[in-house]
Image (tube, rainbow, N blue to C red; front, side):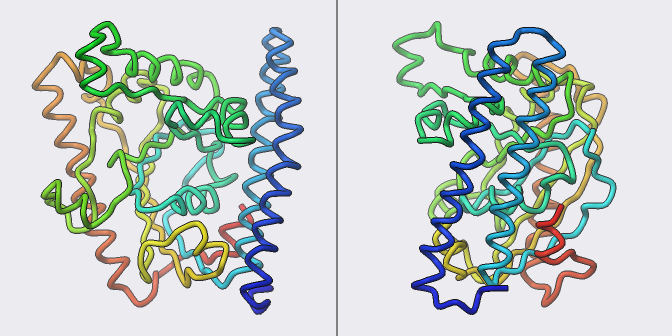
Length: 312
């Protein structure tokens, strides 16, 4: 544990190490991705796809180790029992900060298939990371505003179609598809604007969940429902690398997917849409209660501490 190093020295050092780790992992990742594209033989593509995931898991493990050893942050997590590395999961989590992604990767890395997030199409231009996400088959989504759709009605449904195409390639391999169901990060202002009925959450957007289930169908084993809590307040990434996050609490709950919700037409069947929304809302009611419990509890019983969680 090197958290004793003074912050003005430790913080830029950790940022530099994360940058070096990013370069060291993404450069070979780009090479492997090019070889995968160059060789259309199925066996070769499958081999390179596995190699890409191993590189990504190593990248995550190194970054998680840096947080563990250079900051006092403790991540407590419970509910990891039963997760499989060969499964097909839909991972749903509340969203408060970019730190959420680091937390999810830290506690779930190598305990379940590699997490893939739905990303805004503009993020492909982020240096190093954009190409890395593309190489790792992260789905890039292009959302259209009502104003754009009014001008170009032919764009209607394009985002749904891209969801289907992204999920189609996941059917033949172990995968964890990640979705922040609220659609945006939680803030008190957004919570008030929505008049959200939940104490700690924004209203869930069930449509995105429905599209993934529709695209992947029975290929998904279950939903992995994750609640993330920061008892000291919602942090930034700078807070994380600077060691200003004393504790993170995480609870993982694996849920069965009701068979009657598979294969429904969310857009065209109003009765099925209502049933699906009720299911998502029921998860959100329970998640809200779990977050309250995690915030109010002085300790997380049976939780796994940071060092073990990061080791995978």
